[in-house]
Image (cartoon, rainbow, N blue to C red; front, top):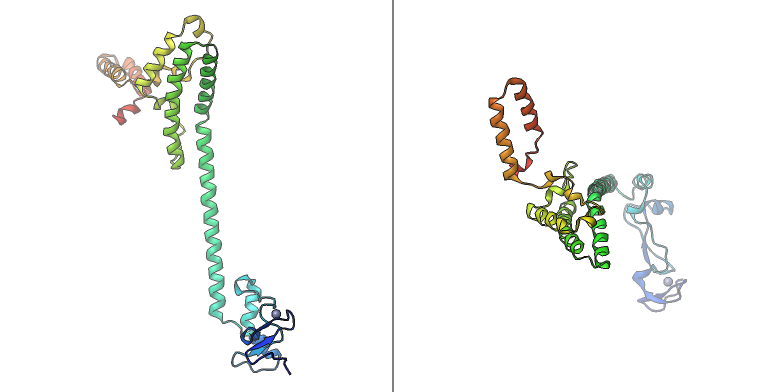
Amino acid sequence: MEKVSTNLTKRCKKCGEDRELSLFKYTLTRAEALARGYKAEFKVQLEGKTCNLCKKKRRPLKALRASELRSRVESGDINEATYEHILAERAKSAKERLSANMKRYWERALDMEWANHLKPLKNEIRLVTNQHFNGMRKDNKEIVAFAEAYLKALLRVQAQLAIKADNREKVDPDHDWRKDVTDAEYDEIEALELKIPVNTRIKMRRAQLLTLKSYRRNPKAEGALLNTLKQAEQHFNPSAKAQVGSTVEKLDTSWLDEL
Ligand SMILES: [Zn+2]
């Protein structure tokens, strides 16, 4: 005889609480039903002595291994379609996980590539920042003015490249940050450098930007030179012509495409 507190509630053997009857009902799996001698043509529901809140929860189907699911199919608890569905979902999410991992891998590799590509620029910014700091400390107005203008251009170029890096654009290994400095910036920095007294200037570290004149993108000058070479080519003898030809090829004319 069950100890029924009322018609609607029942006292749990484990927690001692009076709970609704429905909380004591449980359904047997097909295997359990068969083991207990039921024919198991229908779901067998029983009323237990402990409430469902006290019972250990059954492992959900999702948590079962493939072999365990298989035996559930064998025992008739789940059908073949459910089994296939669960395994298919599992394969799908594994595939998704894998492609997400691959994506993360490539993104990380690209971020690394960008970091390496931006290293020379970062280094220049660090050194010019020091130069600016020392200029301030020594109250050297020429150095401060030069370093300020140079830093401004460097930080602008860095910000421009950072946008590309954030958008995970492809890294162009041939690209030099100095090509992103405008002619106006170049001229200003060059002029300010010349204002630094020679005695100080010769002891200073040379600005990376100013080491090569060719980083100044001067379309007019380069275009004029190119024209002169082409004209000369028409008048020269074949061997000289070949020489001029190779000189023309060596000229960096990539800026022409940007015009
Ligand atoms: Zn209980």
